Image 1 (cartoon, rainbow, N blue to C red):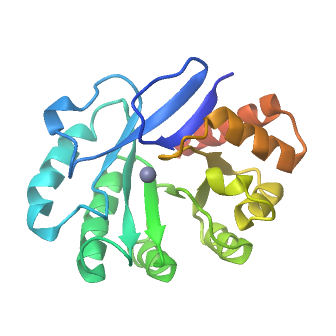
Image 2 (image 1 turned 45 degrees about the horizontal axis):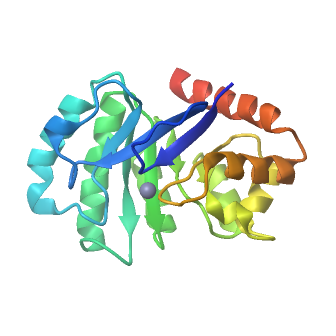
Length: 218
Ligand SMILES: [Zn+2]
């Protein structure tokens, strides 16, 4: 069974790894989008602006139909970067609507805007799964997000001793693992997660693939 890397910015495919490369229509060119290997596509909150939203959404809705587009995103909210929060919320709302239309899960970027993200999920009554990628905050916030129906994906943060992410992995079966833009390999991340869970890497692979399959059944 393969390793699943649910969120990476690298294009290179490795043997034994199913990786979902995340591309942003704000910088990657529409016509150059891969047609066969698994990808996620969205408007990254660092680069998306309201004035280009209409055009970019048109492109996004064409691409979202492709079978290799597994997730919509990364999209989300970031209080430290990008457009003002109000505009970011509009841009995210449009992408949530699109994900619902195509029944594809969302992969989310969130920095210092978790309460706004929760509020948005509740207000829009979002039905598609919402995965928060690169979760590296404390255990309590993680639990709160899971209780609100978000799924979490963890990366290099779990390698730090006593991390919130590490504690959350010990308590949950329903999560994903990723490399994002880190140099650490997905195999290392799996190894660390298996250690935390006191299970084998093979058991963890099976568990994460089941989570992935469940996601796409919804
Ligand atoms: Zn990313």
